Image: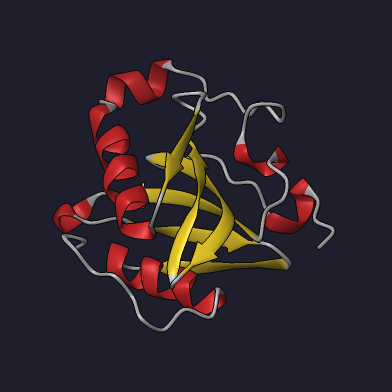
Length: 142
């Protein structure tokens, strides 16, 4: 799959942007890395639920003042866009954290169109559907 940064629509603004690189799927569990331009490091996850919980913790740690002061850095050598091999790539722009859940926009490999999600469960369902996974883990995701 030949992708470019333009194809997946890198996003800016909002509460936080998270890039997700899916590297393998084992028994309906999605493994890979996510990268937050604010934290500037790759974080490995063994399923989407684990990824969501870790990313949610990172996003909620940032105060409004920190988000205004910090400049997100997208470093192609260190972010998950450059990970090879990868099965799929997602870019999430979290617009708000209302009602203890995420609201935002998602773009992904091979699609120029952006998809809105109104809560975290909907986001994870859409991500799993794109990967062809029907047996969805659903821990404490709201």
